[in-house]
Image (cartoon, rainbow, N blue to C red):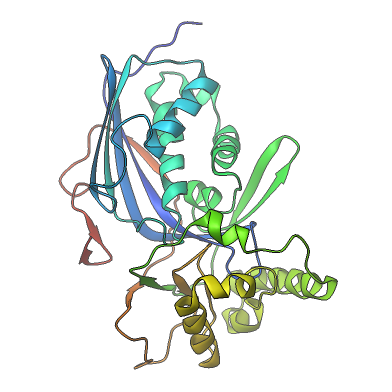
Amino acid sequence: MPTNFTAEPVRVRVPATSANLGPGFDALGLALGLYDDVAAEVASGGVRVTVTGQGAGELPDDDRHMVVRAMRAAFDVLGAHPAGLSVECVNRIPQARGLGSSSAAIVAGVLLARALVVDGEHRLDDAGALRLAAEIEGHPDNVAPCLLGGFTVAWSEPGGARAVSLPVAAAVRPTVFVPAERGLTATARAALPATVPHGDAALTAGRAALLVHALTTDPTLLLPATVDRLHQDYRAAGMPGTSALVRALRAADVAAVVSGAGPTVLALSQPPAGFPVGTDWEIWQLPIDVSGARVARGRLGHAERDPVAAGRKS
């Protein structure tokens, strides 16, 4: 079947995400109101990527860029092979901080490729887009909230990743504490043991179930619902500042967890006024994104090109 590409550019806005949320390792995630804007169009040849904001001057400007790699994977599924691509990224999600920057790039790439193909949504539906994004990322806990918005529960079956999005109680007001230091998911995963005690697994499973209720219905239970014994303690030595801040916040009755693989800290309840954080952290109060990734036609406008993160220049 011949492939027809759209003549006009397409753009997508993708939210930051926080995965795990304490006990929901590789399963639970939350979409946050901090966004990357990415636009793409088919070109006559070659690949050109421009990056503004987070990662500018560091990220590759060719086929190695994660957005392009995800686009190529989606084009393979779609049976489409454009001669060239022009991609523009305005990044506000910090790189390698545990806020889903790589998942945002993957989701952006998959959705942009689909939108550039005239019958792309027929060839790759939303369920297929989730499966592909999770396959590229390796696990679905970040790509699910990025695609769907809200609070997501994701799992994998023989046919690929699946997820559901649940509404979040209005009283849940996330705050992220973002350090200057970076972290690597691969390094954080390498710190995990091959097995854990049965009691730790049982406790964590119970708290993950409670967390679904706490986030959707009763936020007063967020502190006990965010207890984890599967991953955070094992990773603590690799990011002592993050671990110390989580402990201090929880001692102050704040439902704090490591965001994804870290080193960002996510608080699901409000820290008390005057809580001593220190100068090593940027503190952003972020709304919960309820829409997930949004695709539109045309190039990025002036508003989308403004590289501002949570009221601060990136």
